[in-house]
Structures are given as C-alpha cells and as structure tokens.
Image (cartoon, rainbow, N blue to C red; front, side):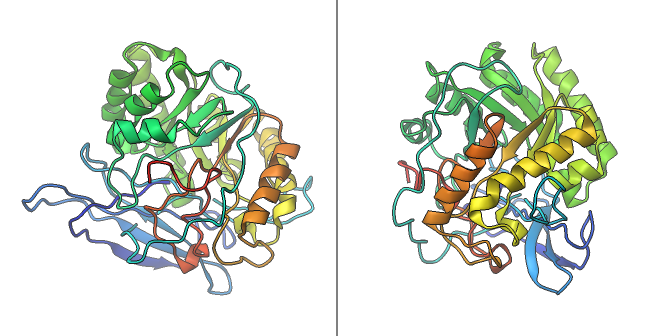
Length: 388
C-alpha cells in the first residue's frame, strides 16, 4: 500500500466498481498520487482509482491502479485495506480484509493520538532469511507533505524502533533501502524488501542490488507486488513477475526468498500465488471485517493463517496486521487507543512468530477517507514518528 504527493497537480481518474475481484464481500483499498518536483510540465500516467462498495452500497475501500514509479517520485505508499469474506471454520468470526491510498496532505493537520499507542513486542535476536522470525513492523519513509524523508530523518525514526527482527519496506523510492540499511546497521534487524511496480521489476531489482552492495545477509525476503491479484491483476501476470524478479536478483547474488504479497482472500482463491512464492505472504486486518472486535483480532488472524496453510501446504507469514487508534467505527470494530492495544495483545497471544505489524508510526502523509473509516493515518504502533 503506497501513495505519493508533492507540490504539483496530478490527475486522478475515478471509476466506481459495484463488484469485487473475489466476490461481493471482498473489498480492498489502495491509492496513489502522481508527483513532480521539476518546474517544467511533464506527462505522467494518471492513476485509476476504483471505489469498492459492499452489497448494501456502502463504500468500504478504494484501490488505485495504473501508475509507473518514477525514480524521483515516491510510489504509492502502504495502507491497510478492507477485504471482508467468510471467516475460516477455526474462527468464530465471519469475514476478512486489507491494503494502501491517492492523496493530498489534509488542509488541517490531523490530531496525534492521545498517547503512544503501544510498546513494541519483545524479541530481537538474529533471524535467518524467510519465515522463522518472531515479529516485524512495516515502515514508510515519507513526510506529512508526501516528500521523501532524508537519511537523517530515517535514522532518527529508527532510534525508537526496537524489539523487532524484521522491517518491511514496500518499494525502492526515496533511497529507502540504503537509508534503512544504514539506520539499522549494527542491529539484529533484517529487511523484508519490496519491488512495488511489477512493470519495472528489473529497474527496482537493480536499485535494491545497488543499495545492498553485495551484502545480502541483512535481507530477510523480497516481495514482488502488494495485493495485486486482490486489485484485479491476473495471477499469471504476477507469477511471471515473481519469476522475472527471482532471475534478476539471483544474477546480483541474492538467493533468498522471493514472494508476492496479497490478501488472505486472494491467497485462498489463488493458491498458485503461494506455490510460485517461497512462502505465503499475507496481509490480514481484522478491523475491516466489521464483525470482529479488537480483543478477538488474534483469533481472526490465526484462523486465516490456518486456513491458508491448509489450502497451500506452505508456511504463512503475516505481512500486515494491526488496528487503528483513531477513526470511525466499522460495526463492532471501533478505532481507539484502548482497542489498538487490545488488538495487538490478542494477535501476539494467538501468533508467536512470523508476524509483521502495520505500522511503525502513524502515516500522516495519507488522507483519511469515509470509505476506510477515516482511520488511514492512525495505525502506528509507536504513535507519530520522531522525525515528524
């Protein structure tokens, strides 16, 4: 889930879809905004925003498609997105979700949470590549105005991030791979990197290779795309991109896991995504279910882990999960600081390993929307970023 915005005007084409890629109850969101920093006019691909609604006509999520990443322009940033569906038998709840967003900085700065949402989980010993780590957290290197954070800002943010074994990044813009590698040097944290734009697999693989400089020992895994099949991309296209990335990365000396990340619904509906990946990488958010209260989040996520593992026969890594500390309620799912803590505690109790939480800090570069319960900015485990 990713999005960008600078100081120039970007066009956004919006289309309304009354059905979802995986059925009437499977919604998902993403957004992005085209950014330019030069003073001359430049033609860019305009994103296409799709708004998903449920069977009652209620907006539940938005998805942005169709923009190439430019090296000087941040790609769309990560953000959880809804994808409700019937819950697995092992869970007494019944539905799921997940994703990211377009945007412009809000005219009035969004309020910060009343206090720091949560303490990071315990742990932090060294981990090998792929599954087998205790916990991780996602991180996005963007300021509130959608500009790229500097290396010094990234380093400042990581002074507060501890207790995690894995840091998940979504793309290669903003020099984020090199900056986060520098910020985490000397720690036990490894990076779960991402090739966000599958139309530029070779280019992003080369960016990663350049940042790593031959030392792949600090890389846990590399993803290719984020929730693309859930957005409507053909599974065969994604599988082809996985193969292309694996070949490009191997040529640079990387022999670790290569996967695609998608929602739990997409993974169950298309087990071939897991088969093509070295493990199943799944985004899973109980909040967008609407039928699951915060204190049952762990049961919800664990139920999907068991269901996907049974369907695919592979190890499942949860690549996003969490709960917002502010926003509007989604039926029984209520955003609040107390519920954020309850959800985190529930998930930790249900899953002892292979979990990446969303996200390290509140993402104030995002724009809150009614379709995602005005909660997009407030998923940070550690509140607002020190560099904010």
